[in-house]
Image 1: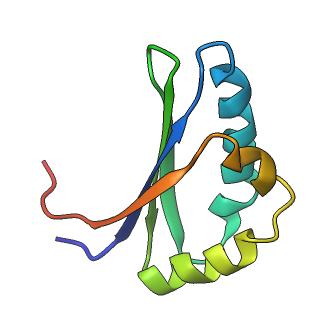
Image 2: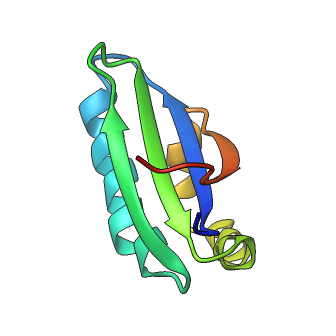
Image 3: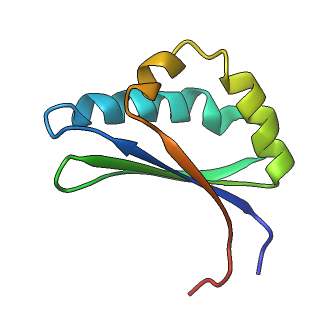
Length: 97
């Protein structure tokens, strides 16, 4: 298996806010996160019921992700994104089908 460092972030939202949240988070991912060294790929998902958003991102290494996280702490969109209560989990690929 590859040794990619995977970050899965869950966000909470309300159905009437999900589109706005997806636009905000999607812009952040597309213009900032995805441009960082070591970023491989990502997927942004909105739940059918409108109550959750999940961002899935793969990085070359944990070190690359940590370097991004240091830069991200001062990003101007972060206060607005934090309103959606992001909760991150960190994973390695165990098996791929």
